Image (cartoon, rainbow, N blue to C red; front, side, top):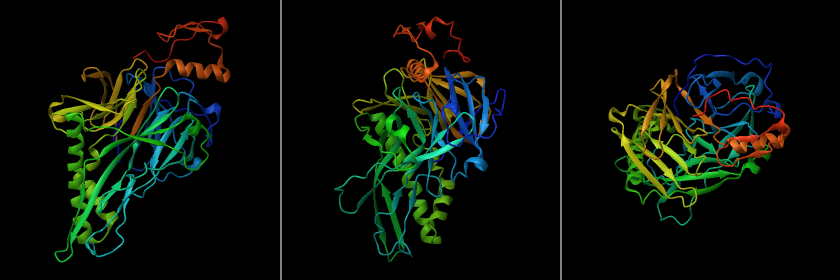
Length: 430
């Protein structure tokens, strides 16, 4: 799926560290990350630029432009950014299909709709996983396959589960989570009339988990993921959001079928209808794992004109609950990035705004942050909200032994073998 992003450049400093290390080693990991967020943006030509900024969206700095000449061409831009609290590398997702939307159409027979039932035509594609260093170097470490389709579907019903390559997040143990949509559909046609229909049912949210161990040892092959389905049917607000996404998808589907019957080119039909229906602006574009309760939080900012919907999925029960809050005139527009700060503040960036927003997960209230950011067409952002585990990981790597921590406030009582005062973080707590 496409994703739009605003990124800020309050002052821009390129880091000149020589040629990037395309197989990122320990010397290219991100060690300065406390109270910081990282973002990746890409322009219409696919140039990927890597930034760091404070989690309150202040003081954004250009780290580097990903060097495709040195590290290899990218089929599609890297998205779905996340910073691992274990090895302190950034990880990103990339769609592998031609159009970069996570799925493709296979119409085996022409002219459609012959022979009357087009059958199982929608195919989800894997996403490639990239490890990114602080010098702009990157490495494709493997791919994650879509969630497996269910068996035993009714006759004439098919299923597709595309992975949302714009959405990814880490938990404090270094497990990577990603998002998918499980959707059943049926197809029918009137051969004599030359008409056809592909009708989608209400989608279901899927959450995939890649363990830290499997991510660390990934070497270019398939990276296993375990998928769980969220229950969005018990909450009326959640159900309404998913039904709205179904209706948008069916409007897009009707456009694709009509265009294909007229012109006979499935990729052309997809491109034309992506542009005319704006379907990729709808649905869930990003989510984040809370550093406090481990639950998954997402925001649907476009399905309804006058309200935004905060979606929370309990990570233990996979039950979803949703909160409506006013967004008169759809001021927030298309969500581009969603990330938690270490203080459990959910920060959102929207494509049509030059500021970030803080979302109170308890009330749904949105507060506009004070620092201005410059709009940018596409991309994703990620924070590392796990202070203690990050420090312990650094200690285990030989950066010093942390003797005591109070365990409640993330303040270190004694540190670095009594060898001095810890320097304050570059960014303020937020």
